[in-house]
Figure 1: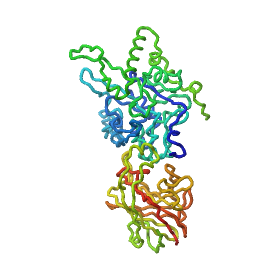
Figure 2 (figure 1 turned 60 degrees about the vertical axis):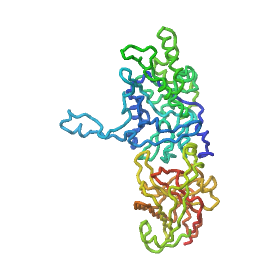
Figure 3 (figure 1 turned 30 degrees about the vertical axis):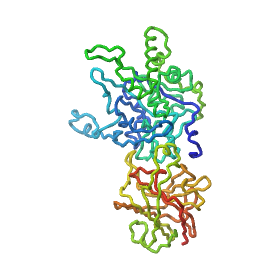
Figure 4 (figure 1 turned 180 degrees about the vertical axis):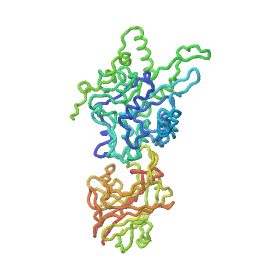
Length: 349
Length: 213
C-alpha cells in the first residue's frame, strides 16, 4: 500500500540520522532549554501549553501527566493503541494575576502567580521518590526523539509526517495535517501536541532551520550545563557516534516501545546510600537500577560500569577520551554539524 | 435517488416544513473496514467495529434553478460542535459523489477515478468540498457559495445544505447540472466516539443520483 505515492518505508528512510545525547549527570533542571524552545517556536495562538522541549523530574508523573502510562509505540512489531491526553494533563493555559500585581496599590504585597494552575510542565519539580535520608530524583529533558521507526509517521492516514531524507528529522507537514491526532495517540513519549485553535498537530522540528546553517538546536545551544551533544550517528569522528556506538554509554528512552529513538541519555549516577545509622553503604545505589532499566533498557549496566571505570581512570590522571567528551572543555565540540565531515549534502539557499 | 424540482419556499432551514414534501431516502450505514486504513498504526491498534456508530441516516434532496438542497438527518444523542483539546472531536457528515459505479467507494476513488464530497463539520460555519483520488489523498477547499444550517434536538442532527448548481471543485463540477446523473454515498462521523478520518459510518454501496430538472 502506498501513501500519497510513497510507501511507509519510503516515508521513514533517511540517508543520515541526526541525533542528540544528553548527559543526565549534568542537568541542572534550570529549564533554560524549555525557555529557549518556547521563545523560538511555540509562542503563537493555540500553543500556550505546548512545550516541544521540557524537563521532567523523575521519577514523577511528568508532562503530560502520566505520559508513560498512555501507551503507543510497538510491541513485537505490532503498533500499540495509545491514549490522547486531555488539556488538564498538560496544565492548560494558565491565567496570571497581572492586573492584581501591576494595578493594585498594594502591589508590594502581591506576587505574580497563576490563578488557575492545577498542573503543568515541571509541576512535580524535585519531588522524586525514596525515604529520608535516601530520597532521589533526577532531571529528564525531553523532546521529540526523531525516531528511526516513528510510530507517529505510521499513524498518519494523511502521510503528513515523514522523516527528512538528508538528516532523519521527523517533520509534520502543516498543510497536509487535518488534525486527526492518531500521531499523538501513537507516540509513546507524547511529544506531539494538538493546537486546538488551528486544529493541527504540532511538534519539535529539531530546529532544522538552524541545523541547515550548521547550528545546533536552541535547546542544546542554550544549555548552561553543557549536557547536550548534537551530531550525526554515522559521523565516526563526532561525539554522538562515540557516546552511542563506540562507548555505548548513551541510551534511548523507553527502548521497549520499539520506536528506536535518536535522542539518547547517559543514565544518572546517584549519590551514595546511607544506612539507618547514617553510615555510607558500600556499593549502594540510591536510584534503583531496575528503575533506570525501565527507562533506558538493559544497556544501563554497561553504561554505568563504563562511566565509573572511565571516571576512575581520569581521577588517576590517565587519559579518557570518554571523560574528555563528557567534561566538555570546549562547548563548541559538543556539536558537530559541519557538512564536510557530517556527510550532509550542502543545501542550496 | 431522483432529485425533485422544488417549488417556492425556503429549504436552507433544516426544520422547515417544506422538507416534508420531499421523499426521504433511508440509507443504511456500516463501519469502515479498519484493515484498509492507510496507516499501519490504525490497522494494528484499532479493532474492527461490528456495528456502525450511526446505523442509518435519512436524506432528502431537491433543486431549484439556482441551488441543490440536501437535508441529512441522523441519530446522535451527543452534540459535539466544538474542539477544545486533543480529546474532543466534532460530529460531521459528508455526501460523496462519483461519475459512476466503476469508481471505488471504499478507497475514495483512485488515481484515475476521483471523487468529490460535500463535507459538513459541526464546528465550521460553512461546508467544504473534499476531493480525493484514493486513500489518504483528500484535499479540502471551500465550497464557494454553499451554506449549511444545522440543528441538534438532543437526539438527532438535522443538517441542511444549500449548494450552488455551478459548484465545482478541483476535480470538476458536481452533478448538479440539469440532466446530470452520478452515484453518491453518505458518511457520518460521531465526535463523541472520537471518529475521524476513515474511522466513521458510511453507506458501503453507491446509490444512483439523477437530477433531471
